[in-house]
Image (cartoon, rainbow, N blue to C red; front, side, top):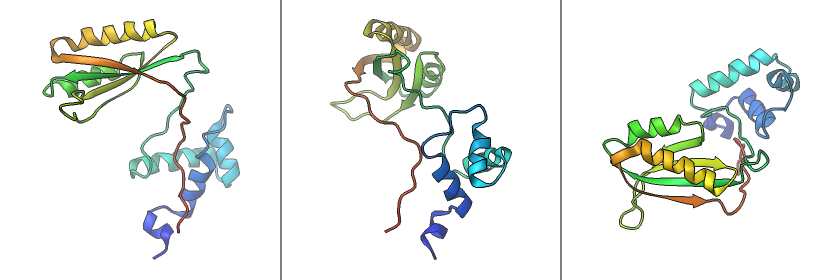
Length: 167
């Protein structure tokens, strides 16, 4: 069995990933532009990506904004110690807030790390991030036993799906 067969990816899957791993083209009709590279319609590209999502070959298709270039230079990962019985429901509510780019639950590592809910906030200043964190604190109410804000100290390069080389 070839590496390609073991990976569960077809030749077209691999070509599509290779064509999009640097991001979709910044044009009015990005699926059509990718389709032109692959010799298929934009609709076929979009349908195939949806199938790959349904099959679990890819997790999501989304924008990856550069917050710094948009003026949001104060980026804080807020970490929360939230009652385990309520963390899922409250996490859904936190994740729906406009200033939260992503929110997720993680295991605690006691005694040093009591936090189980993480929410990334972006602001133009630390004061703006702290005001957003105060709003989250009010939302969490008595289910929250503590929190902290971890500010970014450097910009990390974000990338999408990459194909590895078989050895």
